[in-house]
Length: 247
Image 1 (tube, helix red, strand yellow):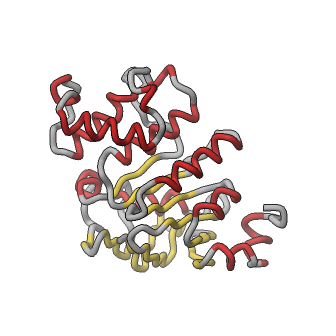
Image 2: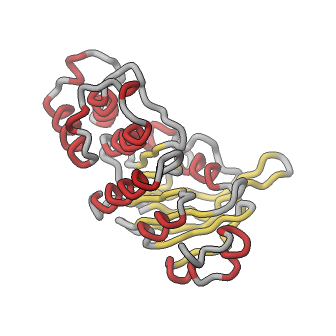
């Protein structure tokens, strides 16, 4: 469903990703781990088209999207949530979801109420809100809801585009243990045909949700395999994750 082939990105003499080759099957949940500066977010930026790779290819659902801009990749089924909220604080939860649905359905970028009230848009808004337990908050302004709920809404905006693949950049960043567990339940409830690639700092959550784990260091893949193998790797314990005997 999503594949990178020898993906490389350098800024002058500095290599940020080096020869990264990954292959995600449809419905796979893969977590990317690695220390700060490992190239995780730069990899995401290449996948979405926000920066161009120096070399290598990106394949989405069998099609080479390496040269496509962000909007075309989104229409092809690639969506993303960010580490920092990128929501419209002055609009309601429903309007944020509705705008994403409008764009995905080819109904333009305007804020006109007619587009947001279109039956297909409303259907998407209500379905996604139900998935994320946001149905009781649809009329609330984003500025009025909790930080944890905003993180949920970020995922909702991605879901409203009806993607094939969602990239999540530290979805539990800044939330407490209870909300992190809620996020685990949220991810577990997503349709199994939806492919997820997640950058995560919460080790417990990473091992709980991942089908596979990839570890980056200085832009290179140094581990790619099952969570059980990652948990038993002395290299990862020492370099990336510290002591996790109690994890």
